[in-house]
Length: 305
Image (cartoon, rainbow, N blue to C red; front, side):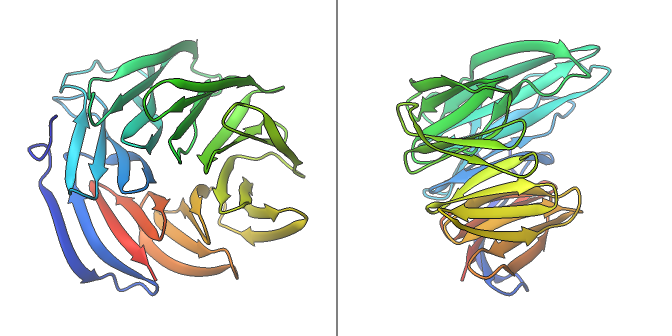
């Protein structure tokens, strides 16, 4: 395992954030800008941007025992005309799943997985598409030992040990996924969300008034983003919350949701729609009552009250 030496700091403190509803417990400072972030249990996975001496790299931060594990060896990467980066990451049970892209007129998309015990990344999927086409490989938020991803309309869910739990084919290309508590939510183009069990059997189907761009579980409820609207459903009960234009639903757990936009990360209390926390950052992720916030090279862990 590689750890420690790639970071300027891995600190723990009891500091006031200056934001109502949250206190800061710990933070880490990476070697470059954090470009993707996810969390589950006592772990967070994140990607660091390419540097002069290393390609886009994924890491797992373990809150306990307070260490950072680098996934893969340091290596240079070539510069392409349209750039390269990480377009999604997930973590559960010590395993990370992430998708990278690189290319010119034709863009190569690669799906990788690695764990804290086997840190060498294993390529799971490779797809080449025109740079003008939509992202073909989508990584969903992970939870409960399940890591879902989709290639076009085909959904595959991995277990935390790296084996395949199930595969399932949607009617239309998949735009977002989420896993929690033995369930996997699959959002397709056109506003259809299907919830599957651990064997890939359909548990429920929800239809929405407009296209869904993000999906998450909030306890027994399902939360989706439709444009500037977050819609929360549980049975026949529905609640809607308005977010900023060009904002993105990052995650949801229990009574909390986190969304980001315009350089700010918002934590929403789903019980009444009030904003519980607001901090500078590019992305957020939730694990229980803990929220991780990425801001430049720094990831801060806060506990919601």
